[in-house]
Image (cartoon, rainbow, N blue to C red; front, side, top):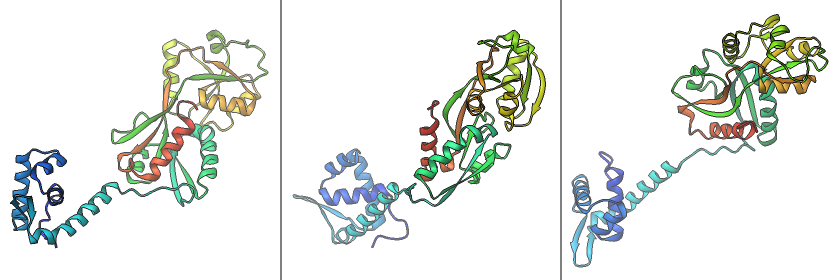
Length: 302
C-alpha cells in the first residue's frame, strides 16, 4: 500500500510508473519532458518518501525492488483515479434533463427572446422549466450565488467577476401606425421633432436615447409615458404617435401590430445585447448547454 500520510506528488507517482515500465532514466526523462538531472532529483525524493531504493541499476536497466513490485499496482490505481478526476464532467442530456433554469431578462426580452427560448426548450428539453426574474441591482449577486443562471440584455454595470458573450447588436427604429397620414416614406428629423411621442421609460438603453436626443438638440413632445412595453403596439397602432425603440423590440411589435418601421432620423448610440454568467458556473454542463442554445438562437441576429 502507498503511505496515506504524505502521499507522493502526482509527478513523482508518474515517474514511478514510467520508470517501472521503461527501466530507463533516459526514457523516463523523454516521456515526462524533463531533464535527466530533474528525474534524478525526483527519484531521490520518491525514495526518501517511500523509504526504499525502489529501482536498482543493473546491466539490463533499472530493476524494481520487491517494495516497488508491491507498490506498482496501487500507484497505477491512484494515477488512473487522478486521470478520471481531471476528465470528469457531469453530462447534461437535454432530452432527459429535469432541471429549473433561472433567467434574468429585461421587459423587452419577454417579448422578443422568451417565446423563442421557450419554444426551443419545449422541443429539445421537455423536462426543463424556466423561471424569469427582472434585471435589477440584485442581478450580479443572484448570478454569483446560483439564484440565476444567466442574465441577458444590455447590462453595462455588471462587475468583472462575470463572463459575457455578445448575442446581437442593437440600433434604434421608430414605429408609427400604418395609417399615419402626415409622414411620407422617410421619417425626417424635422417631422420627428414635430410629431407627438410615446415615451417608454423601461429599458437600460433609454439613457442612450435621451443622451442622443440632447446631443442632437431634439426635444420630443411627449404625449404618453408608459412604464413598460405592454400596450405600446396597440397605442401606436390606434393613434398618430411615434415611439422610438431598440430595433429588436421595435420590429417584433411592428410585425405583431402591423406598424410601419422607420429608421431613427436622429443619431443615437447603439448597444449590444449580451448573455452574462458567473465564473463559478463557467464549466457547469447545464449552464454551458443553455449558453450554447442562446448563442444558436440569437447570436448576431440569427
